[in-house]
Amino acid sequence: MAISEPIVILGGGHMGTTLATRWRQAVASTAGIHVIETSKDARAKFAGTGITVHGSIEEFNLMRGILVLAVKPQTYPNIAEKIKQHLVKGSVTVVSIMAGITLDELQKLTPRSVRLMPNTPALVGEGMTVACNPRLERSARNTITKLFETAGRVVWVEDEALMHGATAVSGSGPAYVYAFMEAFENAARKIGMPHDVARQLVVQTVLGAAQMAKLSDEEPMLLRRNVTSPKGTTEAALNRLLHEGKFMQLMEEAVEAAYNRSKELAEGH
Ligand SMILES: NC(=O)c1ccc[n+]([C@@H]2O[C@H](COP(=O)([O-])OP(=O)(O)OC[C@H]3O[C@@H](n4cnc5c(N)ncnc54)[C@H](OP(=O)(O)O)[C@@H]3O)[C@@H](O)[C@H]2O)c1
Image (cartoon, rainbow, N blue to C red; front, top):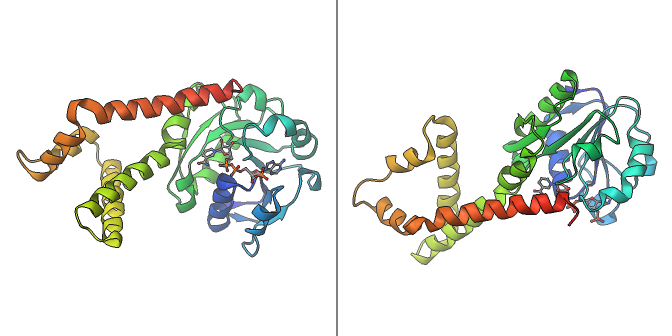
């Protein structure tokens, strides 16, 4: 993708760095990719990356382009006024990835605001981004879609309430998959698989199964049944894993806990 406007990311933490790194690889930006980051240590990691780093909002007078808000939601209320003074002028489009900061709140900066939930696989171009602003003009929507498609897939939702679900499913979701992989790998080692072999088998199995699910029209339940022959090895494992619905129940409880926490954060708790 080519873009002539500056892309400025406020907050060079985990997610800000992920997006800046991906865009540095996948976006030809003539006006550059900039990160504003207060922490000196965090700034140091951008040395030699081609990403321009700045120490404070005051160094900027942004008139056009895309501003990504990637600071913690708790930080935002203290700096909103400064952001408005320095960073949201002219035709700047604001993209907030902050969990729980509402569109109503963002619209105080500009009506050209988008609330968005990315996830960390964006770093390898396999991210899932959910975006929301039903009133955003088509051209700004297209630019945001193209920009985040360089980091994976993008889905727009019209109902802002769904952003809590997006946070609980795709925003936090990579961590659930890593937890599953951790347990899977531990189990593989326990039955005698060497560490590096176990890692390769688990990673490729998860990747392959996800890729099949992505390309197939069939429900996961059917895909699962397709590899389960009666009295076979898979059935023996699934009889344990799915025993009395505990695994399904645990997943429901975990996702619901993230969903409820997202709502609490939005209420300032
Ligand atoms: N991590 C994820 O997987 C993920 C996924 C989706 C959405 N998000 C959202 O992304 C946002 C950032 O999350 P994160 O995990 O990247 O957090 P993080 O690692 O804490 O990054 C935030 C960074 O912003 C810096 N910062 C604080 N105040 C600043 C200011 N006034 N100007 C410039 N920089 C400032 C922080 O520096 P200090 O450490 O010195 O304060 C920190 O380096 C959050 O709102 C989160 O909800 C995260």
